[in-house]
Length: 416
Image 1: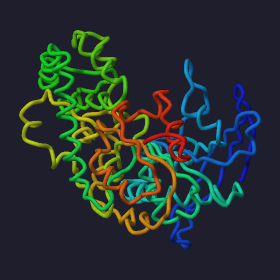
Image 2 (image 1 turned 90 degrees about the horizontal axis):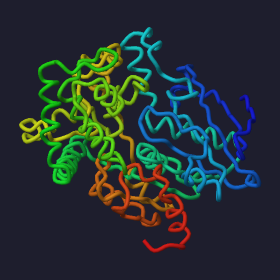
Image 3 (image 1 turned 135 degrees about the vertical axis):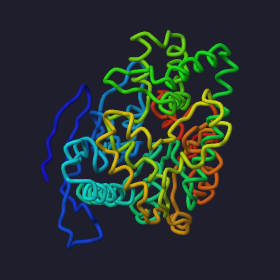
């Protein structure tokens, strides 16, 4: 279990690598993977308690340990109180990452491998890391999918968690993915209409872009012929604090120009950098179900009729045919869409966990709907809930003091 130390500005970083089972509940399986985590401390904070950060996704690595000028980042806020453990969740970053070279395994083998990368396995990895660090308990900060993973943690190993902080990650418990994606369409409808009321001329601008895509004439850098559904997914921008500015800047451009096509490609979610984000994204909502392209099946009639209504994390199977970087993953993605995912959460265990901490619930969250978040919050009476419209889904990363507010709430230093 190698450990290395380095310095970055005023931070001390210890890199830990553990070898763990790929399949935690089958000792006979024998396959292993590596898990990497960077333990970050500010000078003088080397003896503070640990806070493990669980990143959004699925399929994204933890952020690197940098300060974020001009203002303090959530990491700066956390380091006032904790040593921060930046865990690269299995399959990402430096934790035996999954990428294009794994396609050599073949469809069935790779799909089976990916089924072991879910939140329940990430929890087991986290427990192994906690024991490796020699601490009986630690605290957790779960952003988005990291919050989902925190709920899985509370379902099985709540005794290991001293304080729980969740930002935009109180997922639905015991719901079918169809329920979540259907409600997310309602959120995107409202967000689209709000945007067009603010910038009325941009509805026609979006219509021109959609018409260009519909004719097969919108070719992006790298050769992707952007489909209508792919273009509409720029609605994911409306789920961040300042994403509307990126959308506004994009729709001010002539869609025939190089600038538009480059900027559109940069704005689209589900690219080939982290294929897992696309390949098993819907599984993050699968609490005991197969997903079978839930976002496609639940698309409302008005979205089919009006292509200016934008979408967010509503993945489409056609992207496996139209996006060059995702085409090699087509068969794996189709197979995982039919996989019967086991139950992830235990509502009774969550309710009995005695968890203490605080959670930020964003009123206008386009990805983790308010209504289901509040239902889940009722399972956690010891976790103070801050319901706010000050931020969108990326509030933690906006530099707006979200984590400091949650820490104060958890220690009765702030009003809900």
